[in-house]
Amino acid sequence: MGIDVAHYHGWQGELESPWWSCLALVRVAILQVLRRRVYWFVLALGMLNFLIFWSIIYATTQLPIPPEARGELLDRFAFSTQPDIAKDSGYVKFMEGQSLIVMILLAFSGSLLVGADFRTRALPFYLSRRIDRAHYIVGKLLAVSSLIALLTSLPALLLFVEYGMFTSSFDYWIDNWEIAVSILSYGLVLCVVLSIWIVTLSAYLQTIAPIAITWSCLFVLLSGMANAIRRTTDNRYWELLDPWRDIRYVGRLIFGGFEREMDRELAIWAAWIVGGICVACLALLVRRVRAVDVVE
Image 1 (cartoon, rainbow, N blue to C red):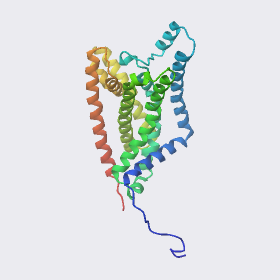
Image 2 (image 1 turned 90 degrees about the vertical axis):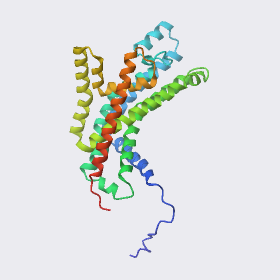
Image 3 (image 1 turned 60 degrees about the vertical axis):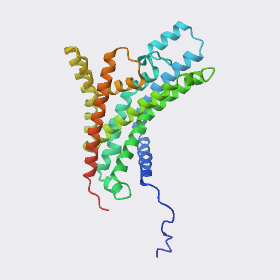
Image 4 (image 1 turned 120 degrees about the vertical axis):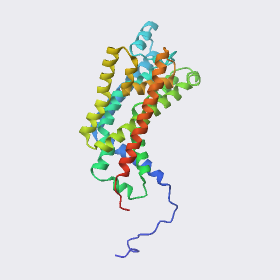
């Protein structure tokens, strides 16, 4: 059969930028996660926490609950939609409460989304096309960031929208627009930091067991060590040894409103630590991807 009979023909249109391939990597990664039912359970746990906060907002705004009971309900879940200080914000509390779910999801999805490309030698297939190493790295970071945003910033924004819908006017959204900006900013920090860390870790360890163990030790073990040393030495600077606490300090820095000046100082140091680790991880990730041989 000749080529003309098989209806092969040259491309007549204008080629798009290869950066659009990053979106294709994101789409494929999300489909990979959604095709496995074990990830549905993790996502369902995250949505369960979201439904709890959704119910709290509905109960305190729509149901005829006495003021004392309403205040007790809000205090019990540490939720406030109009915070005087950042630590009372229900939105940042919700995003911090999602940390365990996010950690579990990333621990198991890192091998699927990134490690498998190195383990099965699929990365040379990507790079042999018009996709460059930079496109691959950005695509994978965006894919992991999409999963993080799905459990943190997006539900928090829905809670913000929900509370405004249950008021009698648009005043809540207008007067508290900074809350939406803070949610997006904190969500951006979570997406950037955690995606860089897990993608770099997955590129080197590749299989699910080493990734899950190392990822868990990074947060659980260091957190326990930081708390133990802090209690022994009575020096709060040891709290910066905990990566999750560093990320939360950065989030508090975005939302603002520290009760003590010491907390603000720790948040500034935490921002430098988190930023330094991200730069080091990016350098290691670029080195790992560049080490892959590609036949063009």
